Image (cartoon, rainbow, N blue to C red; front, side, top):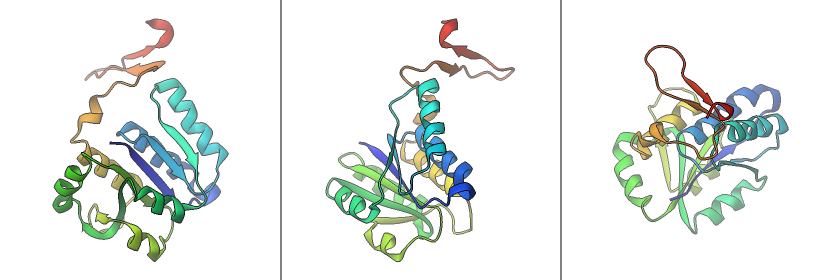
Length: 178
């Protein structure tokens, strides 16, 4: 299974930090790729620097024609839109996890008001609670549930920096220390 995250919309300076966090959360919790619908060199460079230092094969791409992308993706996978108006994640996750055995997943998270068409194109509109909250939090909870917490223990190939879990202090291994 390949997991991609489509960041629908991005409002320049206003969203730089939150969009970067969406991408970093996607990477850290198991997604293979982030797709932005708007170019932002700052966010793209930030993500690429993290991948270079912390490892992995996470990809950052820009796709301005999101409708076409979603429609094409549906031919090979399942489209899941995270929204506070959707079906409850707890009730739907067993079905989604079962589907993910044979199909790729595209997770759609919005930056601004999401067009009605996204709700219609999505195979699942999933809520992580029905209260206003961050798309970063929704994505984190969704990916953690999808992968059943296993991504918290993964090692990234080619990492130049690695954190060793420790209850006291910071244990950091850098490539030149190996």
